[in-house]
Amino acid sequence: SQPLPPTATTMVFTTTITETTTTTIIIIIIIIIIIIIIIIIIITTITTITTTTIATIPPHNHIH
Image: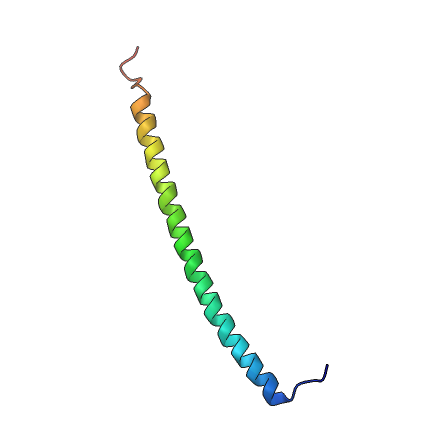
């Protein structure tokens, strides 16, 4: 393999950087969206569990 002339290397390097940056930004956005969805799911599950648990468990305060 022959070493590339400096200009070609720089061009390849620059294009790779821009491509990587765009991909990284897209990946970050996707990750953020996924995290938000997970948080929403967790919150809904917790609320459902709590409401059902409160509804199922009879109040112990009145029992002596």
